[in-house]
Length: 208
Image (tube, rainbow, N blue to C red; front, side, top):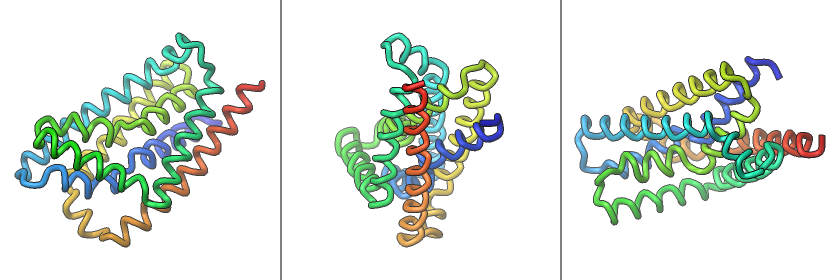
């Protein structure tokens, strides 16, 4: 796989896994009653925290696996299966329901205090799927320059995430229920194909 192909694969995987349009309506619910400036501050803080979480896993993920004695092939298979489950949830609209339940629980417990950290940054943006995808991508980008490119891709995706959250209200009105449902399902199918590719690569790596 060429360098450009790897970057496109990384960008697509992270965009689909993090799913900015899918988070827009949840963000509106989380920040209900806040001013536009307060929403912007929550969006910025949440996106920055999520960036540092994913960047840390991009740098140290493979090292942690080596320390635990887990091969990259095995992790690719496990991570691919996890991403496939997320794609299944997206296609059948289970993921949105689960995310909404997470956000509702947080509102009840914390009364919107520190929502940028929980549940926005973790687990809604930098959730298990995004973390797994980051470690998988880092495994196929071993050099320092490639890791730096991956971190730039993460920064771009989370910059886009921030922009989507800032215009969340307008985006939600524009897409509507039908638009969100169509977009989520299309992204789910795309993620399913990417996750199967991770599993195939993992099997090849494990048995080579």
